[in-house]
Image (tube, rainbow, N blue to C red; front, side, top):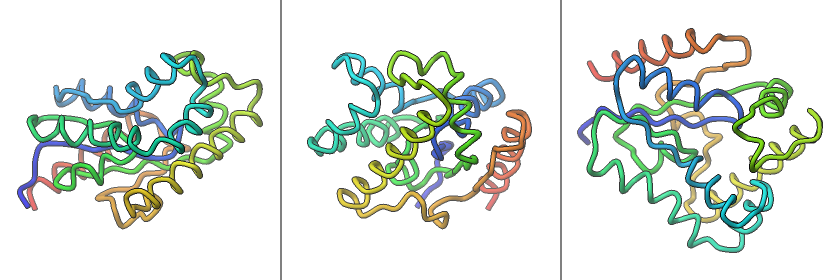
Length: 186
């Protein structure tokens, strides 16, 4: 399988996927495709939170396929691309696959303070954010295992796994770039 100049980024919620995508865009000049924005816009159109939309998707697997296929379809006709998508590694197997991990308590704090999430993720406290993040993570994993037979928690799916809990965004970007350049040379 021929490698493409595509980096797929997935990971734990609030692990820094969006920040990494932005930083790689600045460094490499690659276009960003974000499945999360697509999902948030669908939730906003329905006037529901991400957690409520999760329940809706659970009952409508065709919508899940539409969401996940959007990244695959986009990558088929593009190169020099960063895909910020939970199943991007699966949708684009000839990409450089990145997984970002983060401690759940840190993730909950990040999510609670993230202004961009306020429209569709209404957390009342760190504990509430933690509860909703874990619920969403578990529901997504169950649905994707049932629908696609894919376990995103299997770290063997990725070319590089980084715990962002105690790293700066710049450190994360540099680790990814080092791994990506090595991967391209192999």
